[in-house]
Structure formats: structure tokens, C-alpha cells
Image 1 (tube, rainbow, N blue to C red):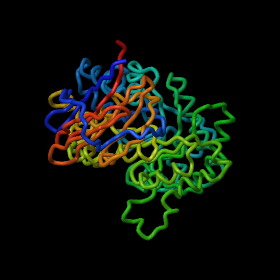
Image 2: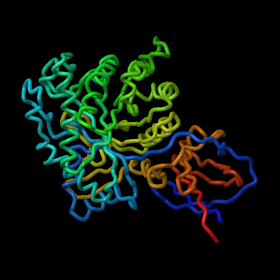
Image 3: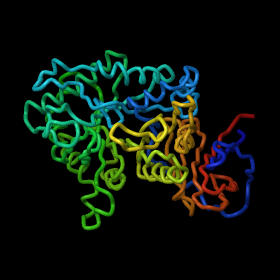
Image 4: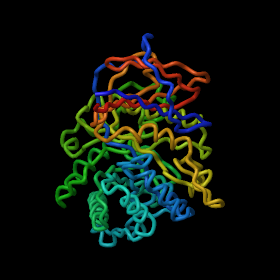
Length: 448
């Protein structure tokens, strides 16, 4: 067997550049594999949203096909394998809606996905042409308005009444069934997007006790009754609140949502995993340590301000490093494509992997496109995260793929070139990492 090294580097000026100045060295390593093995990787992906689909319509047919190939095809650039679908309106829908706005329709007789057939389902089906094995998870931003107090898509809470709770569980069942009829399998349901977000866009606030009781007494039994094998996830958890608000709280507060739900054995039995995003990053370490039998996901990459800068991409790289170090099995981006500035219908401008300029019909791959590519292009679902040691550990992640190739992803966040001495089980290799660069180093073997 012959051992080979491939190295790809990206800077703000030169993205995805193959590098050849690799050499074995006798110098002491500053990053080395430890032999430890951690969680398996399920994959990477993004979220299907109406404004994203609208942006993609501005491209020529040929360029739109190129985008879908690059995002979803197993031989493309990103190789996405797991993606998110909103149930009703997300904050990047064209306008607010749910799948049943008929007041007091507890039997869900007026449930419909006709709206989705115009905007979301064509988007999803186009992706499935390039990867028929995509895994989908879905979550609502808001229940139907008649189920809420106050009766509105934004702000508010679920009416905690027996007939409403039973009807809401049936709402999820109907969603899974309706998408299945369209040829789209919903593999996971996450009960609520951002359970502590009381926002001007579609939202609904839940307590940990409410999540526990709804999953235990309504949603889990409804899935059993209707014979659904769709997984139920405790997600998406955006708690605790930002770090500066935690200074007077105890450490037990950091995983309060997951601990309340998962410590109840009757609720726990229905839950496959936990999805965390935004301020949830402060809770995932303790939850993963307390419940190692569950799967974990980063469900929404933090979305910036629409300027798509290299500096923000550096921050996002740290999110990947944080979440994988703390045990996630998958990492999901937010909007895959948006127009320039990425303005939502409620006025927030956000980043995206790809910008589509309607004036020029041009596609622009943004800095975070390359952050994602440095991970998703070479890390294969089924890879295992490997342990690392040395001063560069805080900027690096390593994985072993099912084909036994080793993938090291490392950032040089400094404003000057730094030398990496990376040691595998046998050899130390030297790499001169460009300033403010992202790097993927792949070690693989060939016969002969």
C-alpha cells in the first residue's frame, strides 16, 4: 500500500486551491492523532425555503442545474445528504402560512400542502433528482394560528388544551403522510423551531415541561397509532439564552430543556436525537455527556447579516469545530441560496451559501460555501471523528472515512503564515498554512 496526501487551501483571495508543498519532517508535531474514536458523521446539508427557491429561478436552466449538482449530487462539490424542510412558513417564506387555517378543525379535515406544491416541493424534488437518498427532517416555526394564544403566526404559545394538543399531533401525522404521497420521505420530525424564540416572524414558545408532555402523551402515541416510523427529535433547541445572560445561573440550567424531557423515561423512549442551534451551543456539551445514546445535530448555521464576509466565515468555521467537538453527527446550513443581501420578508438580511444576482443572472459562491465544502466534500457519511492532541487542536477536526482515508480540516486564523507539523500514526508532515485560511488535508492509500 502506498500512502498519499492531498491538500486543499482557501483564502479570501484564492478559494479551493490544491497545494503541493508537502513534505515529511523530523520536527516535533504540533498536531497529532491520538487513536481515540468518537461519534459517527451522518452528513451535511441546508434548508429548503421559499425565498431560496425564488432566487434560484433567476438563473438560467443550465446554471440552476449546476447549482443543484454542486449541492446535492454525490459527485458534486458539497455532496449534501441531510436537509431541512419547514412545516408551514419559516422566516424565509414568501409570506406567513400554515397547513390548516380552518378554525377548530380538530380532525384535520382541511389539512393541505397545496401551498408547498408551488414552492417547496418542486425545490425538494429537484434536489432528489441529484441525490435520491437525501434524508429530510422537518419542523414548524408556528402551529396554525387558531391553535395559539394570541391567534397569530408570530409570538405566542400553543393553547394547552386536550383537543388542541391531540389535533396538533395529528397535524404532524398528516404532514408526514402528505409528503409521503408526494414521494418525499420525512425521516425526522423536530417539534418546534427555536423553542425559546418569541419573535416577529413565525414562532412559538415552549417550556421543557410542555415539550416533555406533548411528545410523551400526544406526538409519540399518534405516530404509533398511525404506524409512522418517522423519528421524533427534541429540536430545535436554542436555549440557554446568550452567554452574558447566564452569569448568575447554575450549570444545571445549561441543559434544562433536554434534561427535563430526556430524564422522563416515558418521553425519552420516543426521542431519537436532539437538535441544537444558536444559543443551544452552550448546552450541547452537557446534554451529550448525559445522554450519549442519543444522536445530535446542529440544525441551523448562524446566519450573519447578508454581507457574506470572510471574517464571518472564520467565525462559522469555529461553529463547525465547536459542534463536532461536542458530539454532533450532522451539521446543517440555513439558506442555500438567496438574492444579494439575503433580505427576509420581515427585514433581516442574512448570509447564504450562494448569492443569485437577478440583475446579472450570476451565481456567486460565498465564503461560507467554501467553509462547508472543506468539510462536506471529503467527509463521507459513516465517517468517525478522531481524537487530536497538540496546540492546533482548537482549530482542527479529524475524521476517518469508511474507505479508511483520513480527513483533517484545519483553519489558520492568524494574519501571518503558520507552520503545521501534523503526525499520523507513522509520519510527521509539514504544511505552511496561509494566513486566515481554511484547509482540508486528506491522507489515503493506494495499491501498488
